[in-house]
Length: 539
Image (cartoon, rainbow, N blue to C red; front, top):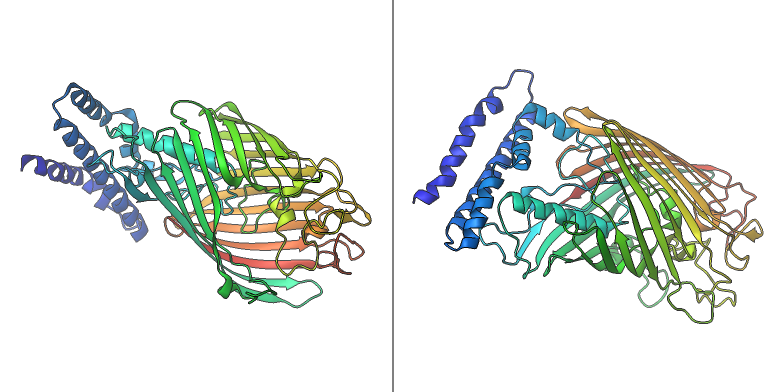
């Protein structure tokens, strides 16, 4: 009975200590502020109760190992990390600091709070299923880097960082993670859009769409060195227009498929080296963006493959990092296909005061395997993939086309963020494979964005402007130039609301590319204006 009263007494003491700052509000404090304080209070109580449960569990054992673990639990309850965690959630200054903390989907990862520890602290070591956080999306309100477009590149690194954070928080609670049973961390996203498009020289269009539904299962274990991801998503494109199952309907299509599936060997708590095998987006480019619409660089060059990767990612603020990968591409220059593609990714992270940055470069052996060149929009009247030098559509091309990537991400204090990326083919395609105005196309793309973050009615808000351009990419259905303006906010926790205006400048009407109609949709010489409203819910 006495042990049962300990968590209750501790909770009442905490309530008594913090009740004055929570409820002693002035007339100027609004309902939202009170709600946030109550949520933070509950989070503090949950943390202390978890610490007490862990301590009681360890005290039940009489072995020397149990006594040592109990001692660690006692010291962890007053460790600097825990004191910092509690203080920042019980003071007004801490609330403001948390709201303005530089949590970014570009170069860093969201932290995993105690609510999301995939361990039952009452029965440690048993298999357990938990939910959250969604990969690449902040768990709490943040005034910086409301990243709408999560490009899914380097997701294995993201998951290893999440696991490292979970391990550190379990240690702070005095809980020993037993590696002999796997734990499953579920996360997901539901995204809807409504848009209006003014097509230059053509009819206007409107639509409402469920643009993304994703369910991710992150499996931790059965070893501390092994983890894996299975990502399910659905296809919002129309169905086929011909064949036995033709329907040409988005609603009747809605097929579910595996977007990514891979396992990673690594433990960032022990070593910066790791390896990944499976189906995923290889680290050629990063494609970070504040915009609703994917950047032109991503649409041109992002590559998904079934690959083997080895990487080096030190967990330091000033450090170089690197990775290398190989895979069998869809396209091939020889008579038979084999493991014929791969690349190297290099970068450097830096931080000084309120300034932080990430610069890098990459190379890939053949950009013809990018999603943008393999999965052109359905019902396209322009480029429909590589027909091959013999015209049979077997993905055989005259020669491989390497490509380079240069990128930079800069966090300029707590308000301004800048991203820029440039991707170019190192040589031109053969005229039989991809052309632009009667010569072999050498596609390239550039994207740049500047965002400013601030608070609106105690909610994080970010305004971003962007400029992008392409060259020799008309046959890939990309515009020549793009101007963007986006406003992002987060009215409720784990949600994002966005409004984007996009102005696309198409290639000149005289332009002609592989498979193009005359004039092609991207060679009208006109401009298209699009307004898109987007709502995202994450867990």
